Structure formats: C-alpha cells, structure tokens
Length: 467
Image (cartoon, rainbow, N blue to C red; front, side, top):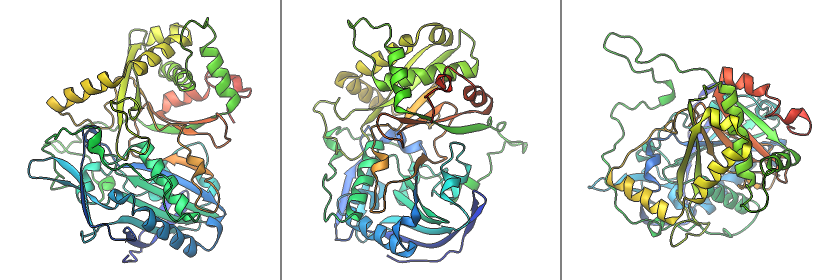
C-alpha cells in the first residue's frame, strides 16, 4: 500500500474536508491473474454512475482515528481475498466483450482508500432527513460513470474523521455488483474487522452460471472524459449557448416510517381483501402508498401516465436459481404504468395490484425473454430512463445495513450519495428504529416535495407514522 498526501480541501456541512492520504489496498494473499466475463444482467449499468453509500458512525470509531483506519484497511485486505473482483478493473477482449480483470501485478490494482479529516463536521450534521449536497465531499466518484472502471478502481472509499465520529463513503461500480452483493461485501468486511479469521459466507463468483451469452459492445471511455467529471461544464451548441436549460431543482428527504406506521399502511391496502386473493406484501403496500402520494404531489392530469419501476432480485427467479451469495448483478427492472387519474381515483389496492401482478409475472420465462431481447439489440440506458412521471425504487429494507458493525457499533445513519438521482427516485432502507420500520429516501422536484411534506394522508395524519 503506497500512500500520498495530496492536501486537497473541500467544504461539507459548513466544515472543511481535507484529504490526508490516498492508498490502494490489495488482497492480503496473492490471488494471481483472474478474469470473469460480465453477463447480460451486468451490462446495462455501464452508463449509470457509480453507486454511492455513506455510513456515519458515532464515537470516533471506538478509538484513535489512525488505529481505526488501520483496522479497517487490514480487514479490507483480508476480505478482498474472497471479493478480489472489487480490487480489479473492467476490461474488454478484442471482440468488445466486457469482463472483470484482476492481477496482483496490475498497475493500480486494489481498492482505493482515501483518508480525510473534517474536524468541523459533526455526526448530527450528516444524519438529518434533508439533502445530500454535503455528501459529495465525503463520498468518492460523484458523477463518474461505471464505464470509467476501465481506468479506475471498481471500489473507492473515503474514511473521514468527524468532530465526534467517522464517515465511511463508498463508491461501487454498479456494472460489477448489485445491492445484495454490495451489502454481502459490507457485512463480510465488518465480520473480519470484528475478529473473524475468514468470511462466513464466501461470494459465488462465477456469474456465467446465470448467463453465458457473449454480448459484444462498442463502448469505450471517451477520449476527452474529464478526470473530475463533476466539475466539467455543460455541453455547448455551436453558437456558444448551453445545449439545454438547467434541470429543475431537486430535493432529497428521508421519511422514517415506524413499525406501527408500516402496519397501518399494510392494513389499509389489504382492507378490502376477503381472503380469496393473495395478500399484498409490506413492500407492495408501502410502494403504492408512496406512488399515490408522489402522483398527488406532482398534480398530474388524470390522463397523464405514471410509471412505477422496481429492480427485482432474480436470484431465486432464474432457472436454475442462483444462491443468495451470487456476486454480481442479478436484478432486472420491472415496469408497470397507469393513468394518474386511475391510480389516485381508485382505492390503494388498485396500485398495489398492478405492482403485485408485475412482480409475480416476472418469472424465469420472462427473465429469459428480456435477456434474449436485449442481447439481440443491446441498449445502454442512462440512469434516468425509468419512464414518464416515474417512481423508481432502489435498495431494499431487507438489507441489514444497520448491522454493519466493524467492532465499534452499528452506524447512526445510512444514506445514498448524490449519484443516480432523478425526479421520482427513492431508496428503501431498513429503519434505524428496528423491527419492520423503513426509511424512505425520496428525490423530487422542489415544488412537489413541498406538497409531499404537507400531505396528511402520506404522513398518516402525523399520529404514530413518522418518527
């Protein structure tokens, strides 16, 4: 691990963030030279940005900051013996088939680890419900495309010393892994840091068991790609004017639904059930509750269509099924659409039924058909291609994010970074309060967010709903 002291400074939450060192951490033991083809489930995410997460810990990490950093690095080196793909790079063969490459002797091999200090930033500054603008100086690779993994680490992290805690900002290349694999890695890393000698559930690394089709793509890193894409100017038209008007102002906010609130929502959506049909799940109930509320907040016309999108875990849906430890992307987007008037003019079970039907019908045959269609005519979509007036769901409250304990307790907060956000994007996280509680992180245009914040139906009348 070679270190450097760039001396870079930025500002977050009213305090300076100073980069102290930057190193690369490789697997502790030699792995050799490895290659693994990316498959159809992975490739559509090449044009997304890196997937960013921020975990905020109180108490300074349980000891001296320097000791905590070394403990985290040592654990990382051990866990990378199993998760070595995260220490590699994207590569392509002569036919344009993408793959993950790792070689102990590869230039720049390893996970990038930035160590920083923000002594003027407190844990409380980072765990409020509003906004993510302050996060960009605490999480690497803002507005960096996954395709940049041809020349950058597939995982970059920043360990930032706070006034009274520790922030761990992570940027994962989404072309290499999905949310389930992300939190499998995180829990395994934490397990090692707590004293385990090996990973209790090793990753299943042969992604070609899920799909073997070699898809050839003519994609490469743009020759003029800026080193710091977040600071690049907007494209210009020949007359010098900006190519497009500035995008609408977006706001992000976390709505914390307690266990009792989740139970009320689920009971309301299932109120008309006579037992003859399958009950709506917690996810389907909460999803239609949010879909209704966002549609009201947008004040859509009755004839306007609205699209609900969820990225479904396909590990148990493909034939043959893949293990939960499958490492990679094994998700597909599921879409359902309806007119806004029909959605909000009907009881909540209408929207829940649309979502339930779309999810239940996405079986092995549907997954195979989607893959075959894409392989015949590959389309690399941007992260905003989720449909008109969309509500799109990422992450899952099933991920035990608050159990990521490196030996000094679980995080005080888990949030998404500024990447891959657009009007209607929401992330669902396990609630900090435990049980069936869920934190709903929503991005909306500012005017719609203001209406959502005042929607008593969404907030359940302010009784025992939000905490």
